[in-house]
Image (tube, rainbow, N blue to C red; front, side, top):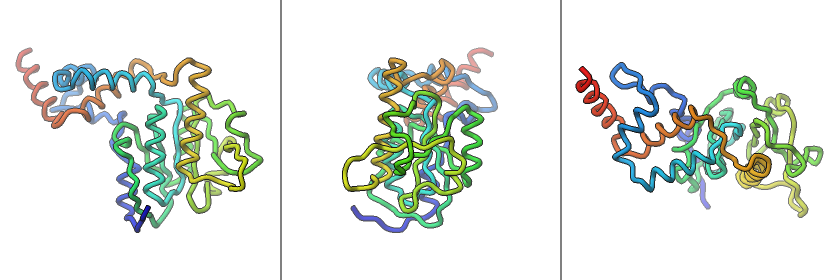
Length: 256
């Protein structure tokens, strides 16, 4: 595995994007469409197999779990955490962008970033304020033996887990603002895991606990499900926005 210097622009392109809650997804020609309008206009361009895949993923999606990466420098680690988040049904990944140098890696998101909501923050306090306003408890994932082992912690409530910098771990600014700390039980000589490996283990444990308690991981409200479905249809169809513009205009002419 080789790496080289990466630009801040590369990292920021990875950790921020147009999220599913952006109203511009639904604005066409001065008119705001409803999610079901988008789905109806694009339905013929989406295969039945793809529709089933989308519904299956929506069944397992949650916004009650969030992953937070704090000051990371390695694009490969951030990419891997995004892949793990997407794989375990986590819709939102937040990045606290406080580093001034970044490393490129051969590892990529393998398209996972396309299907999740990515938030970029310049300060931990702003990120945590946003999460707390949304009802999240905030836990730091650390190697400290004083932290609660993940298999002994209740991770089934609305929770955001913070994963720290590859070099120094979670920053002191972030750590002093969290509600608690969790750790992965380890029995070998090594004291810590690669951050992306640790994130995968923690997110898997959260998924396991949620399924055990609720019978499923997914818990999107009908409104959230409709909005995300519409955005995923837009992302699944080539030149989708042009198709929606054209089809919406035809609908308008037919009604007048």
